[in-house]
Image 1 (cartoon, rainbow, N blue to C red):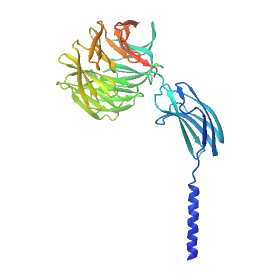
Image 2: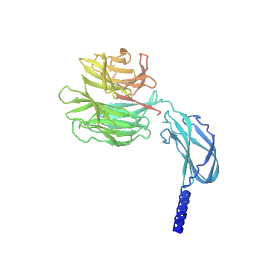
Image 3: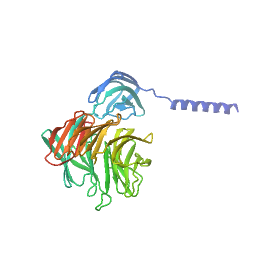
Image 4: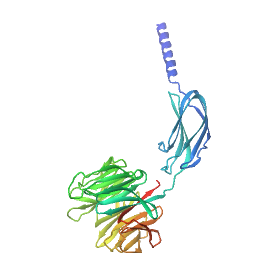
Length: 430
């Protein structure tokens, strides 16, 4: 019996020692970072020179260098070095080759592998993002269904990017993906053109043919195109033309205006019969209805103040009035009566700089001050576009593109296209 107990004791001891051996923790490499200094400041397109002394109890096979954001997502091209040594003098570099880097926390990441284990060391650094700047002005000409897209190369010259034959519901330049999005209503659908390669990247045709418009509203932001159709839904597509969202269906009416934000896609809904108009807010990308508000007037336009606040413009008792909408507060607040100078042709702007195009000129509206003034007394202006980066207003009159650096109240003739100009679009550096 004693021998049996002793045998069991020895067996348990050997088992415990074996487990201890299996559970042996491998110590991480010792890294002495020489360069860069922690929290060093860099700018886009700078080179990060990396120097360090690394030692490990066994041979390291590879060392990978990268820069990540606070979500540990790589933001520049990484570099992998084959070292095959336990004592390494690291002397390398990374180029900050991403002009789209945002103002956020960044880390230099050193990953070391010995084929069985992966070790990681993070060192905080600072990267100053590029400031957003206007790179080029583009414009669309129109002759019947024939549309051409041009890029202005200098004051007296332009080059054609592409041409298409369709109605023009709207257009947008995606500066991040360097694409031009546009949509027709009947003959052709949504198209995406590569601005640099001057080619068609993808298209979304109308699902139903006929003489009635299929697409009824169009809007886009960088990375997302949204279009309403006569089936009573709003569909969203990413920069590659893949569908990312479809809203729940509304019957017996259509969306006449669509706008995008980070978390929502919104539409102004008009019934085919009756006077009950609504403002529908859908979760993005789920497509589920977040809120629907019955409107006290005929909806005309939506303008984004910021990601959390929007301006709605309604025609009410022969006057165009403004309302503020806050999605997270689910509130629609009446603000000001803007003008009774009708018809309103277009409303553009951002923040507290809002511009209203009427048959008699351009009004400047400040919602924070409840102030509206006429800044351009000039008839015949057909379209306006606002550049919030440089505070420039572009105005289209027949074949001329004029501009004004706000707050000056006079227009400068900028470019004569020679053909009727339908729209002006802005390409930024990021």
